[in-house]
Every structure is written in structure tokens, then in C-alpha cells.
Image 1 (cartoon, rainbow, N blue to C red):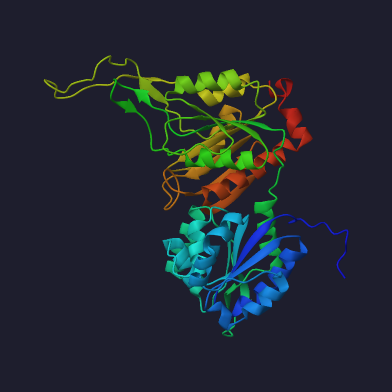
Image 2 (image 1 turned 90 degrees about the vertical axis):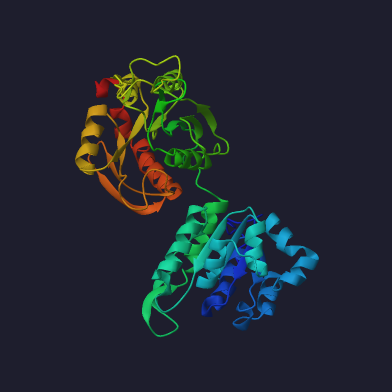
Length: 418
């Protein structure tokens, strides 16, 4: 008998549970019961292949709601529109390799894949497949594409498969999927009360009214951190160099172009902040003289551009701060860890995020990144290649540990640091 005092963590939420044609479809039955036990309202959408493994009636009886199986039937009632519009999350479990391919490519040839195109809520997929399919390059590519677009993939587990083989392909356990749903619908608010001052993107140092010096930074890492911190309860101000990225929801974005403009905006907000994250790729040099008109090449066989150093924003902020935790970034092409440790020490940082921008699939412009986190006590954490949004949460977790360490906070006082 269910405990009436049970903490029903999903009360008031609506879930679309998508079931595809895998032998693991029977596990979706217990998953449905788990969602209902936690207080969620669940609508089930099945592919035609899924009905060969479990009957729609089973899900209908347990959910107390009609099961959607046919696109044309759904079209008559507009369920391919109404269900995803009303849902707080779509959970596809099990998700076959075929379904992942259709989702990644944006195909809509059945009711479930069409729901993904019409819905704007988060998507969670729990893949299940056999015969080494999970590691096939095509499947890997489709999973990466979905993750890059924000889908949450709950990786399959390793163990005995339906074929009798041992490998990675078993659908993740009920609790793992529940944890993913809870993280989306009841996200951590562990940054409540923190005020994050954050930078992102490149700076542009003008040569003349047309040309400038800059770098390859896309701003994606900084914007991902801004989004993650806001979702976890922080107040966030993002001082951004020029990018093509949309402003993260709920984040105040202050656009700048040059290093000096960035320094000015940061200095005026330093006292407001509790955490400073310097993810921007700030130019180290700028032209000593900016031409008032476009420079012409007529009559010139060569040209010399005299440069001067820009303000070292990271060092300046380190010297000006009082109790703020300061995080820097080190984008390197060689000798990653020695350079990162040297920067951590010379700039007086609490944490540095080091990444090799030459690593395939990572770095500037990519939706993915790998990093090594080094804190002021020398603790090192290696983070493998993953989406920048996922890495953002890893970085915030590391900073949160520093914020929660009373002795570390004492070390941040001006007296300790000086």
C-alpha cells in the first residue's frame, strides 16, 4: 500500500512517455508506474513496432489515459500537437537506434517523432539496443547531435543483452531515468543567493573603422555557464563580447567590444558579485594607434602595425576583489597543465578551467569541450569530452564546493590574500 506521506517529487507535472520497438519496451511499464507514483500525469505515445512487444491496453490501464499509437488518428484529435505542448518533458524509453536517427535528422514519420518536432519541452532519451550498435559511428554521431541540441541521453548500461551477448546496450535503470526527469523538472537551486558576474566571447580591438584584431572565440562556453547558473538559482550578469548567440533566458547581458569596455563594465559591478567567471577570450594586444579612416593599400608593398598591451583584466580583478571567488580559463595549444598552473598562481585565481583548443571536436566554435579543472589547493579534475552545457554544470559544481568550504571562504578575505 502506498505511503500517503510519501514525498511525490513530480506532483503537478505532465510527462509524455514515448515507447519504441525494443525488447526493453516491457520496462516502460514499470517506468510509467514510477512516474505515476511520484505524482506525474503520464500520456503514452507508442510507435507501431512498440505495440508488437507490449499492448497499448497495458499502458492505458496503468495510466488511466488513452494511448496514442497512430499519427493519422492523432492528427484527427491534434494529439501530435496538444500532448507535447502540454508536456513538461518528453521521455523516450526505450529509444532504439532507429528512433535516435530519426530524432537527430528531424524526421517525422510517426506520431512520436512528430511530437519531437512540435514540442518545445525538454527531451530525455534512454537508449536500448543490442549487438554493439551503441558504439557504431552512426549511432554515436546521432547521439552527439541530439546532445548538442540540448537532449538528455541517459546512457545504456553494460550487461547481458537479449541476444545473449555481454555489452553496453541495456536500458538504464528506473532510478537513473527518474533522476534525469527530476533534474529537469525539479532542478537544483544550489546557487540561490549567489550573484555571478560572467564574461564570454571575444573582444575586438579596432585597427580602423573597418578592421579589428580578434580571436576565434564563439562565446558558447560562457553562455552555457550563464544559462546553467541562472537555472540553478543564481542572479547572473553576462558581459559579452560580440557573438551571434541569443541571450540566455533570465540573464542580463551587457554587450561590449573592446577589452577596455569589458574592464569598465566589470569594475562597476565587482562589488555586486559573489562569483566572477572570466570565460571571455580577451585580446592581449591592441593597435597603439587607431586610424580614423579605412587604411588603403595603394602605394604600399608592406605595412607595420604597432601594438600595445591591453589591460590584464584577470589580474586587475584579482587585486580589486574582496570576498569574491574568481575563476579563469586557459585555452592552450601545448603544455596545457604547466601553463594553466602558472596562470592560476600568477593571477591569484581560485579555480582555472584548462582546455586544449586543438583537441578534435572541442574548443572554439564547437558545441563540445573537454577540460581539466585545477583549484588553488592543487586539486585536479579531468572532464572528458561532453557538451558545453554539461561541462558548465561540472564547473559550477566545482565552484560550489569552494563556496561551501568555510576555510576556503576565509582564505578569500583581503587579509588572507595579502
